[in-house]
Length: 204
View 1 (tube, rainbow, N blue to C red):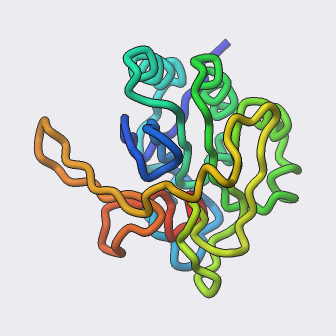
View 2 (view 1 turned 60 degrees about the vertical axis):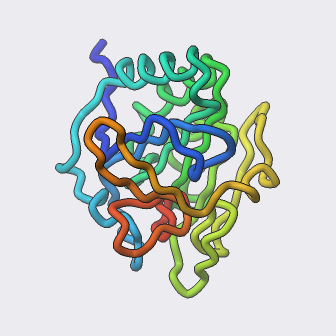
């Protein structure tokens, strides 16, 4: 059986602005929804980014978890549910490491529930934040970019919507290796290189 791969836009090993505690953040590459005003248009092209084996991502998660550097995994994009076949084993592996899992989608809950594999995914997700980004309803608060977005707790969820209230809205990360700057979070400046889909349909 061919190993699952996930097309990735970018990864931040440790972030505090993409969910409660310290979290590894994976931005998937590829989105057909194209919400107007999305903060992450660079994640839309399905041919961009790079293919990464799920086992490689799980190895990185394990190293970070074992050393106590992270409490969870956050998956944004792009559109994660358009790669649900690889997303399920990634989230299952994260939960097996005793990490909490947050996933953003631009699909409504009804649309998401109609995607094959959705029920299996929710077995391994603590919180799903669902709905397209609507610029006219922008709130950029509690990890929701716009007010129409809804929060669904998965089976045996260890996080609740209340846990999202105190997550920092913006974060600046400086890579000690090369000094590059990353700005992320639900309320990143518009010129930021990326946001936790803060203004887009995902983390927002």
